[in-house]
Image (cartoon, rainbow, N blue to C red; front, side, top):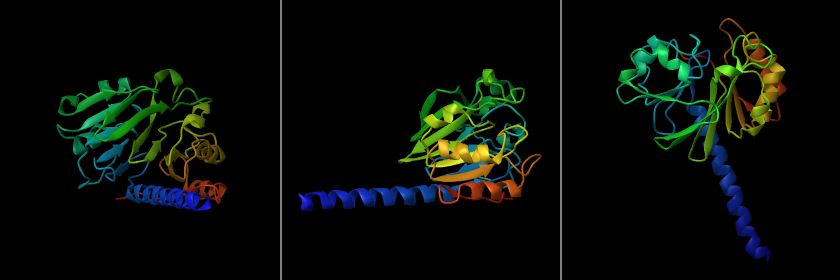
Length: 238
């Protein structure tokens, strides 16, 4: 019996080690351009989240996910810079009215609870709203965060949100969470608790340092999660 069990244990350990390596590879691939803008091509397609203020020379996009229509998340100038006639833009429905040139790219509207499979990615829109500061991001707007999964690894981009009960239903490997306490989280502690809610293995803070939140908040976020979740505090690419 022992001889039969031992190979199974070894296989399970190898699978866990490979998955951990995949998570690290995906996290290493992420480029942060400040605020909530990220890029990765680790899954194959060139993917952007909430692109704004992109420097010259940034790669064209295959898939763009926009969390909501505020100007620090939806920038026509940035979108024109990276969009082609092959680009797919995924966003809440109210964003389309701000994309007058969207005929250059395909537009797909996703509301929280809806999902789409594109180019080997499973993309799920999840809730993103304020519970207490409701004038900024009301639940009724149906704005979104996204969970993107491929090859057994998932990235959660939270968008602009407070800590929500719905986060406990999210199971991700890498969580990109806002730290700003004016428009998003009520506190850095809430952001750290949200990382725990999502069962993330790696957490990366975003949406700080431009108008709200600070490097000190990012350091506190990392300290609060020490020994529980790996935190990567990134510097914006230029």
